[in-house]
Length: 140
Length: 140
DNA sequence: TTGAAATCGGACCGCATTAGTCCGAATTAG
DNA sequence: CTAATTCGGACTAATGCGGTCCGATTTCAA
Image (cartoon, rainbow over all chains, first blue to last red; front, top):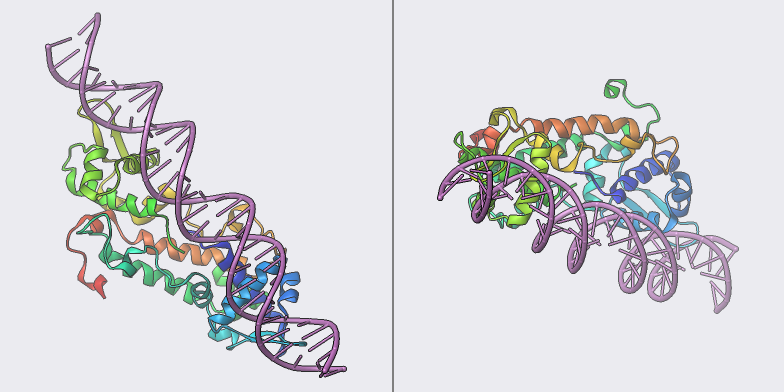
């Protein structure tokens, strides 16, 4: 029920990128120092992030990362899916049938739960996260 | 983002228990045969389930398991929490602070997401799962 | 009362996914 | 053209999970 540390770190990195990158480029090393994440791990994360199309990577001297889209158009769900793949609580949905029970009465309910979970994550945009002051109503 | 196989199996076992146990007791071996889950694994699951107070275990010959509460009063969230502990997408909430970032702007948003996820699971009761015919609206 | 069977409960071991680290290929500025 | 800086992919160690087994406890029957 917990998402991987990589996904957690990815969200922190994206937030840091949205904050620091004022139209310019930020290196992975800078992000690592900013967030306290080990440098190689940060590199691994930004690789997946750019492969998923959330970050735009510019190579060479003076290069770096920048957001591929406006922060308001990126949600937690996008980041999590970029790192962990499709949001699904169980794998039997992908395969098509449960290996253990041929007539599983639980299966029909999973799409509902999956959609609800994804909706919860999609409701939080990167702009909200990057903002130092979160919405007050959310603190409840 | 995926819940463990144990939790998945636990839901299947609880559904089978609600279906078969017509006021009587069911053995863990019967449930294993009914669901196709390996017997020792089923034993491990029912142990956690009864430790959490969701199942009532009766020892001795002729004993077995039965639901501790009506099926309508048990939700997916209860079962998942019984197996995996509290529903929290990240561990930093429990510890109190992120180890990597001392002023993490993401932290304030997690309680909202956690509550939404838990709500999605709490909305599905065991009675719904055990019923062979799920609600039609959910199939969408 | 005693025996035996059947049950749950906890402990052990092997495996898999994950987290972390490293080095190489590509690109750009000077 | 050279060199510095960057991202990209491949390797290794480790924590957690899944699976299996055996022992303690309780009940029914004789």
